[in-house]
Length: 351
Image (cartoon, rainbow, N blue to C red):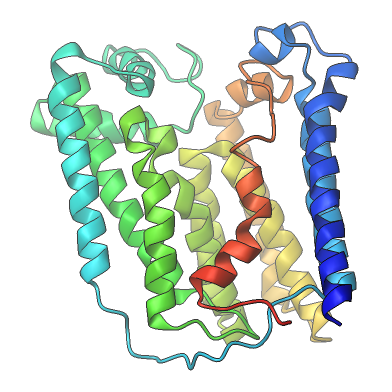
């Protein structure tokens, strides 16, 4: 049995290695559109790369399920007692200290690294220009109107208003990440409070590495927000709270469209696929109230399109303003999550 499991793991590693090679090299043989993009310069087709990434993840999931390479039942006994909040306080202190130090260093010079782009667009907004139609902006309107509100409320400069909003998103995102880790559930695996603390510290460490970019696009809040809403949706759906499901789905889509339109698209697909499939898998009837999500989602997308949120997104969909979608440090960690998660939860693979 041990030899069979070793062979299956070796085959899984070979599958991942071949998949990563394909993502690196095959897209350069596909034609690319003539757009202003690093991908065009390197003749790298991001659409083909994205399809290959999706195919690789699907192949890994299929192989793991078919060969039953899964975690054994945990020996931990999950305690409903909330974990100590001291790690959260440490993380908040580290985030705040890093943000204030960078704010102090960068504010006299205006923008720095990623923040230069946001501050430049914020100045245009404060000068009366219209977002999307009056100037180009890659992200959702909340990333500019939030800092603009602080500028007008407290009489701050564009740079200080932006850095104040950015600091608050770091703190809010840290709290949400803590909530996600504490509330996450697995049907077959009980996760102890100490394991959840290790998982939180593991994730927040990598988020701290993004703080020096000083960009809202790398803020922990932007990263964790979709997971927070999907987790709430999962819990409400399992509890049969249909009104809460509708409210979470609608409000989650609105907030994600306002912050990052591409996350809004992904969230809507996840919701519309997960809700009925989760019921069908258990041979349960799909609540009629869930059908209301289709017209409500359509209305939200129509309003977002009317505002102009998707104007720049179309440029991205054509390959413009894009770096080559290579599977280096950005994609490899996704394939390493199962063994990393096992170690963090204090588990080892079955012999």
